[in-house]
Length: 155
Image (tube, rainbow, N blue to C red; front, side):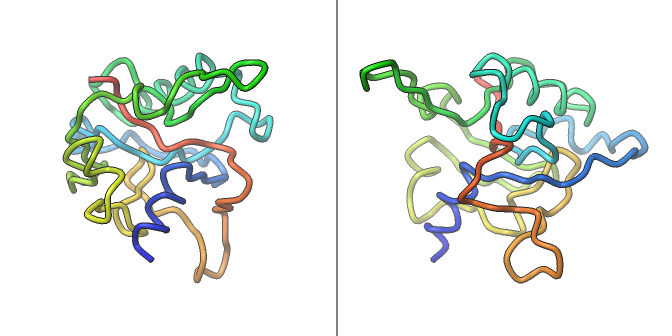
């Protein structure tokens, strides 16, 4: 079940409304993984990989991250079904930690294994907040309809 949740959360997506918040604590400066707290406002149209990456970078910067080169965990396919870009190849080698410092994956292999530490409690937004989902009174996470990606810096 945890692996299923983890894979769901990798493509995970929160449509939490963006609220005005005070500056984020410095503890998030070392964050190397987050689930985007808000989409770009056009459903799943993130403007391709470049637009998704720019959106993730802007969210990370606003949260106080010192990392650069943020990459949305997204893959592409080329017309005709030819191989495109694999999300695994875009995110570096790890390890990755959330906004509170918890390691969610030690390597790409670990990130896609049963040992991955992506749970409701660790799949935090760039603000360090849990994503409202199944079991919560308000479910803002829909794994079937991607809107905002999990995000990693390309290290």
